[in-house]
Image 1 (tube, rainbow, N blue to C red):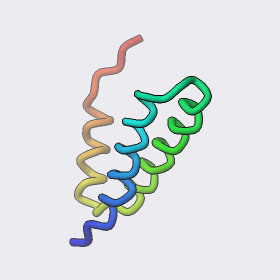
Image 2: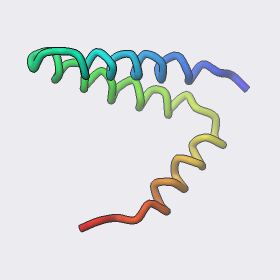
Image 3: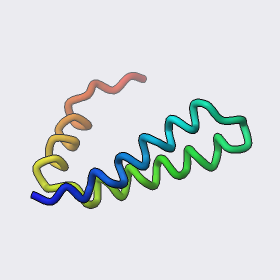
Amino acid sequence: MSLLFLIPLTIGLAVSYLFKNSTDDMAELTSLSTVACLIVSLTLAPWQLKVVVLMLAILTPQTN
């Protein structure tokens, strides 16, 4: 199993750490980078991990 999906995930986590410690101007840019890295990470992830994420999304109760 290829672990390539961990590279954008690690980058996304690093960017989210920067988001926590940045000013308001940089916060918008870092939040967009975090979302993009997480989407790329999910795209490169193996199908087993995608199924687990899908099951978590389906089984998590929705609040109104």
